[in-house]
View 1 (cartoon, one colour):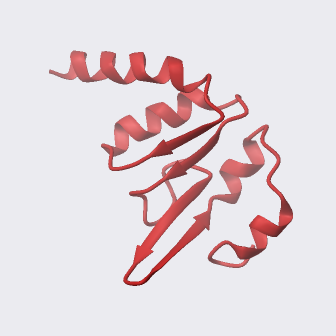
View 2: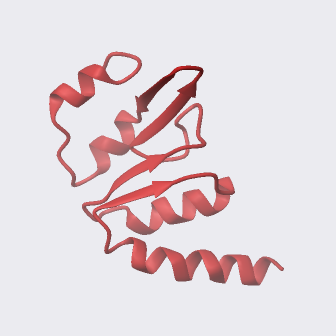
Length: 97
């Protein structure tokens, strides 16, 4: 039911705000966005695994390809965050920020 999935996402989000980093693997996009929203404003690095366009609000999105792993940076999410990201990390992100 919708009520139980909403309740489940809320109950997971509260402890997530106490984390330093939040790794979001294969999740329903709605649940992923709720978790990201729950930690917004807290010093939490968010990393998504299943967000190819990096549009779901996570700071970093892992990009898997045969024999390689890279990441994309959501500069919008980073700029709204209270976490400071070293500029060297920004340079190595896919897209060359």
